[in-house]
Image (tube, rainbow, N blue to C red; front, side, top):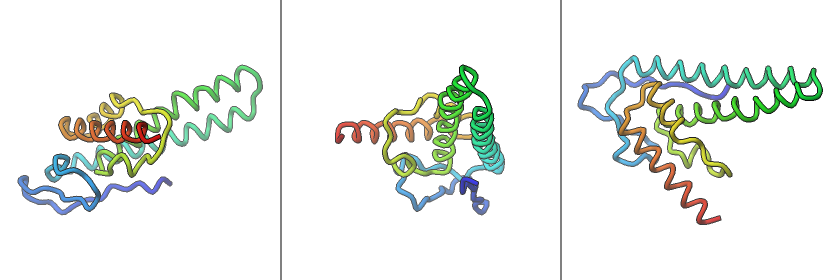
Amino acid sequence: MFGLSAKKTETAPATAAVVSTRSVPAAAFTPVPSEDFYERLIHLRVKIKSLAAEAAIIRREARRTRGLVRWGLNHHRTTVVRKAARESLLAYSMLRGVPYNAVERTCRVSPDWAAVAAAARRFGGDAPIVAAWVRIAQEYRKACQRAA
């Protein structure tokens, strides 16, 4: 549906490092994740898919109504559900090692970085690595805003 998939790596010694072909800074490399990490990644992927389904259901139901009910449904879809989906997708990208600038080339509103970091930690991200990814993403956003 979203082209999301968790790739399993071969089990390696705990001292080995996962080397990504993507442009991730050296500080962001992590030890080989455990099997539990991949299970948590699947849970996050299910959350992303359920948020997309919720948005589709709300859109379909809003078409059947009028007035304040329609406005309320659309408002919920475009504020609460959309924000949660964006934060979950950014957390998923972070856990897979995708840099922020590859996920969102341009955007007008910065995401809630605390919520993105909390989602990444909840689904298996290490706190120092999450903090490094968020810091690099914030620097990228500032550079884009200065250039515009």
